[in-house]
Length: 156
Image (cartoon, rainbow, N blue to C red; front, side, top):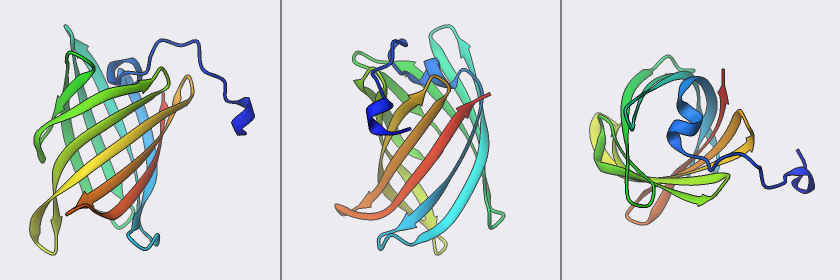
């Protein structure tokens, strides 16, 4: 899709339950601070709404065989959404940027060389079609960008 063909959608504003209810799949890659691709991954997510909350089960497989499962719980907040999950320190804050974009900010522990280290994450999700998102993630520690992730999510 060229930039000139992307027109502001007439869809409801992008929110976690608005996109992640039901089943979705994703794939992507991780680049180190020098821009080298270090890992790639794929997975599925299953979201269900209970009352005003979204439960999201995320199953991630890295192409080197490592697997991660994470259960997110999203709750409405004053200006957006909050989310919690194992490995997340405190709550993630999800805020709209515009009707087709949302920003997630959180701190998460990652195991590096056998040690758990807290990194600050910022994910920017961009809706490019009604059923597809692209996410750009920045991983920082001490104000330095250590890694960037690019992911594509498709609703099934």
